[in-house]
Image (cartoon, rainbow, N blue to C red; front, side, top):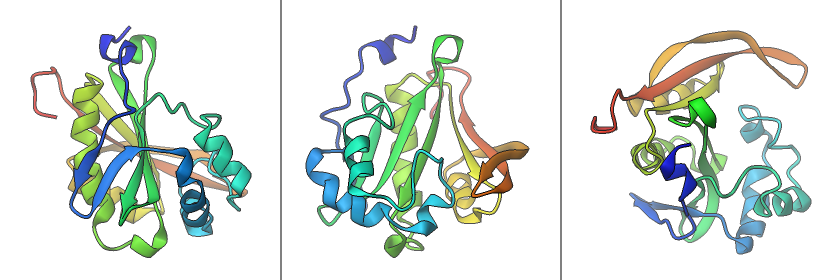
Length: 189
């Protein structure tokens, strides 16, 4: 077992960035979460764990930890005092405990400003260091060129395409796989 994973506590983490803060989700984020998450443009590129429409009940289930494991580093992206997106990593288990998969989303009103590129620039090296990771990876729907560019700007390399990997809204999609890796923990993340 990964020792860092066994003793982690992310409840007090605050990662400041330029115009945002990454921090754990709180119960009082519910109204903002529902308001920002309930947009069909967001759900197009995310797992079906992220429903549309996004209801108050969906937000309550998420904040209760029923959707994703909130003991993992799963953070709100706070802008101007309000949670308006999310970013998080899900560490592997067993022989894959040295790697993690991560994802992110942001309210469309903030798209095109470079905010997600900056959030990933803060989160990715922190996650790799804090979780003692050798690999951080993300899957991106082939049509989501903006998300792919966010990863590329942050040193993630495209490793390939998983053809016909995802069924979303009745359509089959290819999934582009990106990763950032280091051979030893002394390498810069």
